[in-house]
Length: 112
Image (cartoon, rainbow, N blue to C red; front, side):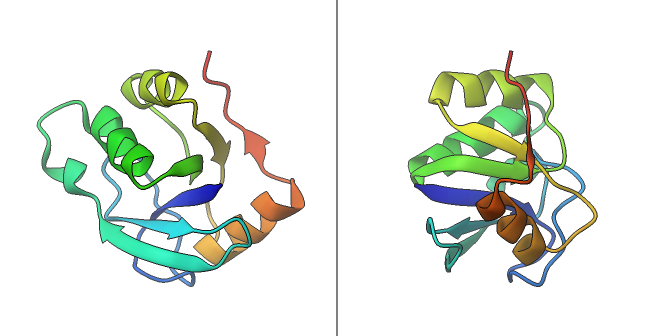
């Protein structure tokens, strides 16, 4: 299962983004935490519905888990519909967030 992280930058040393739907980048990692791909979040240009658009992009990349600081209602609905699970992380690097996810120490974000 691939892991997606909302990121401020393009490397694992980047900080987890402060916002999900309008974060600058997404990192896609394999199940071992190895970075496979980085891409710009095109949803940042959306007038509205950025969270839902971002979820669609991640689902198209095969992500089954998302690490983000928090989620808005559009993102929550889209994640629930996609079957993706979400985990909360903030104030840390993407590498630290991934390590905590792999250890099972991140709090799962309820999707209702």
